Image 1 (cartoon, rainbow, N blue to C red):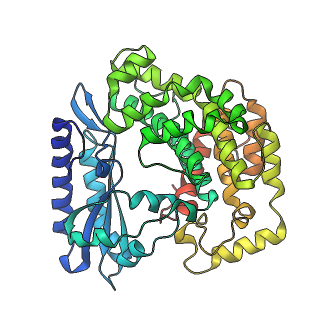
Image 2: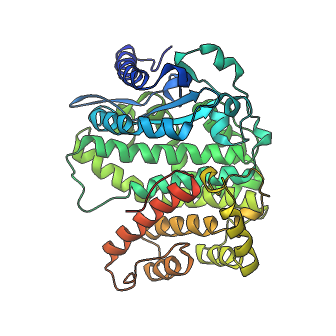
Length: 423
């Protein structure tokens, strides 16, 4: 199994995996698990591994699935492994962005929900430990089964990650890995927004290169997408460069394409410049996918008008229904965005739409062309969580920090269904 087409990078990532798997397997009773799987870009041979002054560094995280045996208490298993995962993430920090592990059963793999994440999971999983026959039983999710609303969630997740990578005044310009991580977030944003667009149209090739070609040479050539093509024109030449970086860690091509140097400070400045530059790119594709979900053209609507439309969807009856859903045992851990058992319209009647809109308002609020006063008012009006008592009187930086903490907690606990506590 190749994790990278470059032999040196392959060996580097293989050694990372060997260490992680050894420690995880030694900490888990063999009677509790059927297999340990890896998914994501490295499993497809597309690990983003970059040469840095300190050596090789993997921007691709190690995304594992622990397949628990029937009747195993997955919550107890997760609790038992958590300290090990925290320690591994701390120790791997100098060479890798991190390791993450979810816990599933054989049923989850053979009867997956129709989500983009499960479509991607089935593409090329690798068995690192246990019975590899389990790979043949993983069910494939067809693109036609996936609700368009899930493509919108995909967009929001990438925009939210981009928020977390926003330029900060206290950032260390000599931190090479931090600059790379910020560039990597813009890479994922640029490529995955194209992926979401294609998922919304039930036509998603497997590789990034194929997706970009279909997007630019087919869809954007059609008359109906002429306004979108015009708005994205300044960014289209960047897409093949991002694809090369994502699939191989080709930093030289980024340096050459954007006319910068390879040192940490230059990459840091490039990452910050591109963060702002890609705001209109994200806005255009977000509007496209949101319009597909709503089955209406909102491409020419300004953000305040879209915000008002979202706000109008909130009402007392819908709030009551939403509360009952939230109180339903087992509902919250799945994440409120899960379309299972929920009609495609009902997710607009929940605060998750407002939460994501808030995230996007903040994201676009960093644009030089945004109205900061409107952004502040919109955050106060649409935030689906309690803001600090002195939020209005805080400085801009204090507000940003307080809001980001709230968004992180809300995003992880309510929308992704992770068990977490607010700081």
